[in-house]
Image 1 (cartoon, rainbow, N blue to C red):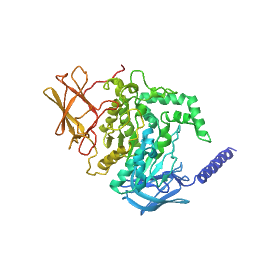
Image 2: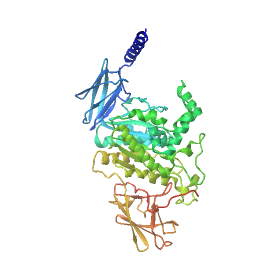
Image 3: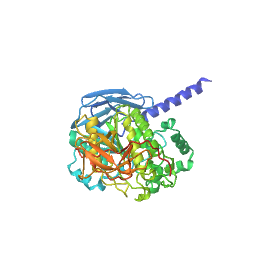
Length: 512
């Protein structure tokens, strides 16, 4: 009598297992499709789902590798490192069925992510758009802008044999391809006004208490969660208002748009973000409907969180040498509400200067670069159109740091400052051919003594140094260069690359 129920349970379980096994057809991740670009010179993971225990074989470029799907149906194989190839080839993925992917090439793959200035379209930058006609060997995977409360296994999008829509991403790909003459693949995953927190994995809450509090608030906020779920389930998409609301929430962009990309073999990630985490002092921060602006990390802590974020992403990609190229925020504003009467060296006026300093902290990690944009930007527009130089400089950095090319990729960087009578002499690295773009004296330098009362410096170029003085300061001690929202700068090296902003004081800003 007791055996019948047990046999019945076993039968039900067996039928369920058979049902699941037959319902799960062989399917690679959406990242593996026609027109894709595979990364050269490193192991290339290929993964997907199939029936539990199904044997999967992947064939490409003379390689054959096999595995068995797990009990959950997930499988992954790794192809050995390959040389670059423009020749389109087929990849075959077979199990109980067979999938053939066509027009597959091998080259350099980069992920380009961030907020609105990364999303900024090629169509809005005439100089960059003009390059489309001469573009070749550039392909893109446009990640669908969406969110999820859980870490997704698959990403929405597909590879296309066309350049990316992002002006910065395309400019970068264009000049990189011109340099190496191999296929360039760009995975573009950006969303305007998103904060760093939107792209952070949930487990980073174990490291940062402020992020843990934000995540716990979101988990408990049924109104917000219902609102997002309602927007996601809408047949006709969501409104602009809902779009803004969703992209400003923590973690859920990472879950849907970044987590399922890993560990797609990539050379590195270009990150153009920071505006959302930059806020003014003295009671003039942006105020939003959900008050989200006040809950993200500020500019002084941003660099430390960004460093941990990079390390966490490298762990997700299983690549400790994955390169991260950070785009410095370009010039914007002169002071609070663009008031030119405010001292440009005051904390109120320098929100973006503090953020740039914070962004530079990533250089404390290996395999990182920061692209200098201090000479670019728009005083009144947070979305400047001078995106083409950013693409050029990103490509130069990639050539030097990831392709080991002998190119000058950076402008002058502070080396040291020495006192000389009543003046200070600034020495630079990367200063060969130091000059100003207009032939005039260098601009953008301020000096101070122990009173920390800043004065505009009189400047003079002497070889590869800049001599600073001011009649009001007899014993100058500290220097600030280009340390303002939208500084006027003209100092470059022989490669016409701008000098990086810096300061030598240790003053910590406070609310005024």
